[in-house]
Length: 234
Image (cartoon, rainbow, N blue to C red; front, top):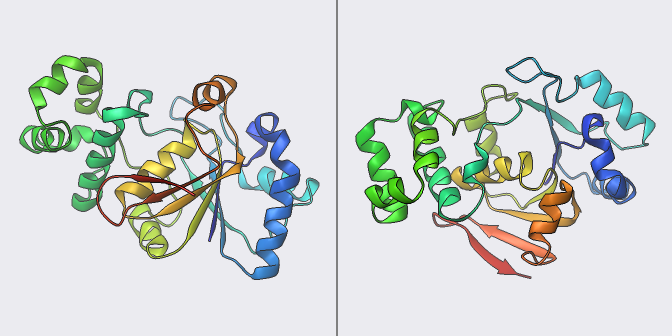
């Protein structure tokens, strides 16, 4: 199963280098009758800023770029639902734990989690909730104000979507690496979905790419058969 994140006109300049290989990958998927999903950002942010694309613009762009999108399942989502403070290290682990809790209890944002449950979740990941509050006060404040959330726009619903992915071999591509793509990966990890990153088809902001240049391998498998993320170099 091929999962494409935010390959859309609004960000086309950032992945111009990946257009040809993406076209080839989609054609191969069409020949093999693979399940392909395009997850794309809604046109407007909550603040009303135009950050994404309507579906008709995305389809017109795909036709112009000779993409094989006829059998592709299009899924619309809202822009951004996890604060940038939770994109690496212990904060990322805690964010995934919080997402997992919200999925289990049907909550929409971290602000809805009770104080006792939140302390338990953080303590399980960190070992000491008070210690986390002391070393990451900004992250703690953002958790309490709802800076970790389940997408409020997601065609078909997030829990139902995750169910369809469990047990599949999910190949992930798209971007931005440390923005929307990572949010989707965190969501899958919280939902018990294993996936593999196709590094040749991942795009980044320039600073994101420089930051990760010495940290990544060509192929990374994220195994969520147990809670947490196990990184295996292929």
